[in-house]
Image 1 (cartoon, rainbow, N blue to C red):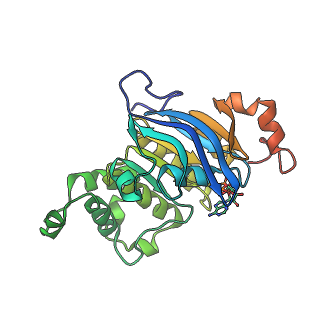
Image 2 (spheres, helix red, strand yellow):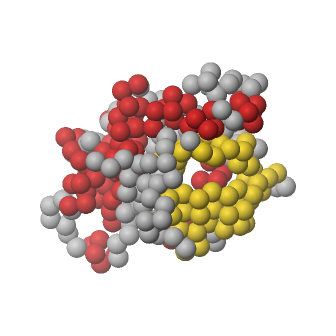
Length: 260
Ligand SMILES: Nc1ncnc2c1ncn2[C@@H]1O[C@H](COP(=O)(O)OP(=O)(O)OP(=O)(O)O)[C@@H](O)[C@H]1O
């Protein structure tokens, strides 16, 4: 199996996400302050930084949830200014810190609804017999085949997060922005999630906003560090760990080493 690599598949006519001079302000307070980022398909990028650094706001801006200036292009198509559902249809999907699945519905029904999000009303009205192949595949990828008929509400915490990721897969998202996917997970669930990200990350662009430094060290192929709305470092795990400016911003709360 191919795994994500540092820098992704740059130069291999791969998909990419390019963020240029991105700025987001709330009543005069600049939460994202001129961010540049280039992400290629096949890169498993972690976005880290202290509380309030602007990580979630950056994801919100890319997915159309907050107004921003600058530019965000996906393989040359401008996303800024487009509505959230349009951005989702262009293949940019995200998860939130709290899983947002339909609790009363089964795993399969949740995936079916997500797969239908991009379909025309008449396609949706047609009664579907059997399970769509892309849903079977997503169930397999997220490891929930045996739980397909389980109500999402009674899934374990980790399984709910995996279901959310599966919902992005069936929507054909090839840029996935995951906001603290392993928060509240057990050690085993973290490991499984990391393996899942490796499985899906080779063919997609995956950005993981995370505070868990052990998880980052184990699975990141590249890391961007944000502080006070600006990118202060970018590179391999080793690069950013050895960066004096990064060590500096983690001082006062904890060092990067102690933050895990
Ligand atoms: N809707 C909003 N209105 C005003 N200020 C906001 C809003 N959303 C975020 N902020 C502020 O913008 C800054 C960046 O917040 P953001 O949530 O993006 O940080 P973060 O890096 O994701 O932090 P954390 O790791 O704690 O989730 C914070 O100071 C926050 O208070």
